[in-house]
Length: 263
Ligand code: KIV
Ligand code: NA
Image (tube, rainbow, N blue to C red):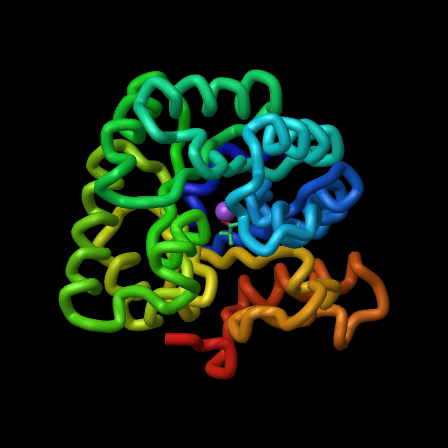
């Protein structure tokens, strides 16, 4: 049975952790969904782990459409979120056109875009058109040249800003929110203050669900993997088993553990 937005909302109400993982092609999308991952994110992290770039900035909308198409051919039942890549969401009109391509050509169920204040009008416009939107706050890889890769929301002022941006995104119509590298206590507080599900990465265990980059959790990322990730292949003898262990460890709140905290 296909996962719908209303099923995800129901899981959130029932305090059942939502399990999300990235995938970039049909084969992996098939096994990720088969393992019981409810949400597949076609992340622009593909710029780094698939294309070999140093950042996500070079990823184009055409490439996101292409990978979303591949994922949706292999994915039988998971809810599919596709990222709006860098500079594909600079105006409301451009954001609508970009989202339309990810949905019409790519077959995505939901689109995700990075930022708070900057994207509020676009989130409202997408939402008014019936396009489900996922926000993304905290560490913003598309703004890495300006802010770097570091934990956000450490001091009081930036924590307050994150809380208010999260609330504004929800008010604008976002149906879900990704929090990346936010201190665990702040991620918990934001999750409690919102009605929509909050999916964390590097943000502790007290969010509505978790997401990881597939290559990191399979231990095939070249160079060092982020501290908040975990290599699920270390104790598995197949990819299918590693995926199943990820699902069960997120559901049972074994992952993330203390050692995966970054904030
Ligand atoms: O691109 C991606 O994989 C992401 C996740 C890290 C949330 O945006
Ligand atoms: Na992304």
